[in-house]
Amino acid sequence: MKQKHDISNKPAAGTREGLRLENQLCFSVYSTMLAFNKAYRGLLQQLDLTYPQYLVMMVLWEKDGVIVSDICDALALETATVTPLLKRLETRGLLDRRRSSEDERQVIVSLTAEGRAMMDTALEVPVCMARKVNLSDPDMAALRKQLGQVRANLTANA
Picture 1: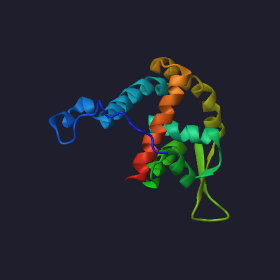
Picture 2: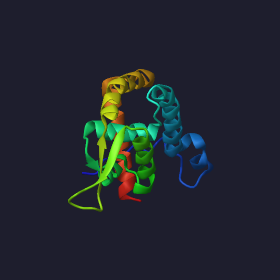
Picture 3: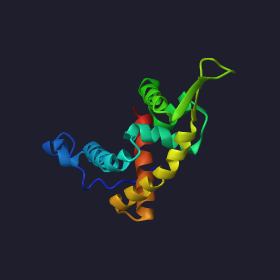
Picture 4: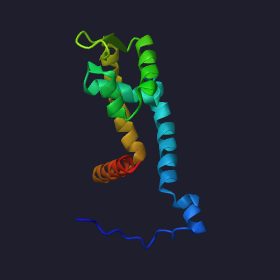
C-alpha cells in the first residue's frame, strides 16, 4: 500500500524556492556528514585512523577474514577506493591481504594481532559520538532507518 506523504511544506516545483539551499535534503545530509567527519577526526586521532580507514576496521572487527568485495559491499564503495585504504592499513601492520587458495582472483583481508587489539581502544568511539549527536536511542534508530530508506530509494532510482 502506497503511503500518502504530506507535501504542504514542499516548495512548488519549478519555483525559486525549490532552489534555496535550505530546502535541499541533499545539502542537509552533506553538511551533516561534514560535521560528522569533524567530530570523528578528534576521536580517531588517538587511533591514527582516517574515517574511511575506521570504516574498514569496523567491517573487519565485525567479521575477520573477508574478501575485498565483501568490504566494498558493506561500505558501498568501489574496489578502486577500498584497495588504497587496505594498502595503508596493511603498511601500518593492522591487517594482512592474501590471495585465496580457492580462487586467485579474490583477496582475503584479515586483521593482525595489532588490528584486533585496536578494537579495545576503538570501543569508546561510538559512545563518544552518541554523546555528541545527543539523540535518544529510539530517535537514533528511527533516523538510521529513514536514512537507510532514502539510500535504498536513491539506489533503486539511480
